[in-house]
Image (cartoon, rainbow, N blue to C red; front, side):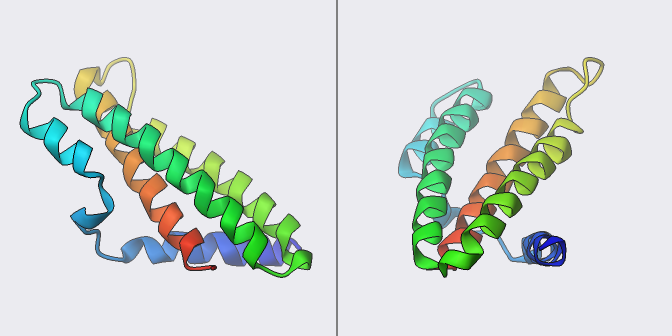
Length: 123
C-alpha cells in the first residue's frame, strides 16, 4: 500500500509540469481581476470555487475506481493536502509581508486546480 501511495503522489508531483491554461478559472475570477484593487480577494473566492470542484472530482473519482483502490485514493488525497499546505505556506512568513501571502494564495489555487484535473482523469 505504501508503494502505491508513493507512486500516486509521485505521479501527482510530476504531472505538475503540465501547462496551465486559463480555461480552468471561472469567468467570475476573470471579471473580478479586471475591476478590483485587491486581487487576493479574487484569489480567495476562486480558491473556494475550485476547492468545491476538487471535492466533487474526488467524490466522482472514488465512485469510478475499483473498490479495492478507494482506501489508497483516500490516503493519497490526505498526503496531497499536507503536501499542498506545506508547499504553499512556505511562501508566506510573517516577514514576507503581503506579497508572501499573495504568493501562498496563488500557489494554493494552482495546486488545487491541478489536483482537480488529476482526479477528473480517473473518471
